[in-house]
Length: 318
Image 1 (cartoon, one colour):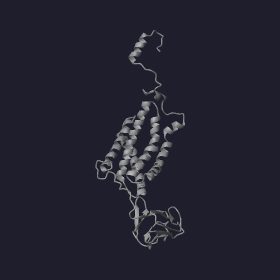
Image 2 (cartoon, rainbow, N blue to C red):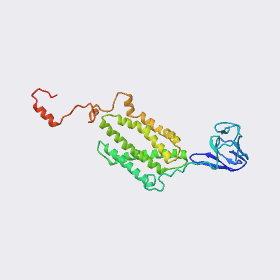
Image 3 (cartoon, helix red, strand yellow):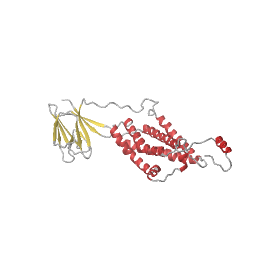
Image 4 (tube, helix red, strand yellow):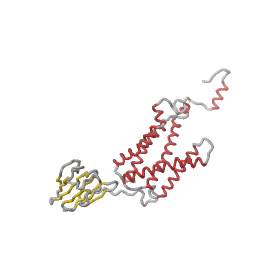
């Protein structure tokens, strides 16, 4: 009889045990053929019996957290059809044939390609410096009083460094919990790219506000950033860097982004503007754009002076 494989699911990686005996016992006790140390697994949880006709029997041995076979709880099951899904306590496992097809190899992000953004640590350093430069430039352009270098360093350290550091730390801990490994270089690169994209998109939204004489570009950006861009960025990272399945990555991205999105949206001035008639935008702002269709036809200064010279005292021009 050809040996079978017991695939035991763990965080990020799988553990594989060969089933090559006629009777194989699985449980937490140390005299089992396959030992599972999870506390929800019974000392003697199940046994797998192989027969000469290539069939196998899975026998449940415990009343506490009994083995679920293909989402059912039979006392035993005889089958020839593989794979067979098992739930052993809270451990998920499958019995597979040795010739079971495995997924295609996923390439490491940027490995061996120095020109790739994720290929070398120097890209992380360059992007961090770019973020510091952008943060300092934003503070300088927004300074309405006398400029002080001490204030610049404080703002850059507080806003830029702490923001990037906090996101990297939180996401690194989550990544460790999800896939049981660290990808610090790729994580720093991703966070810096998202940080730079935020400043680029925020300034573009402000420009569109002025261009269209409306506040909807900034409102759309503020809601779209937290509800769409952040979850998409996290999902792409989980799929392409951590190599998680797309469906699971989307769900995790929404869960990870929610603690960021909900407070940011609830405290957003755009939300209050939508819920209230009060507008923080000055009324004259609505007439700043040349694309404003409500503006009347304008004339040049020279034409205005020429018209005024033709008027008699006390007359008004149309």
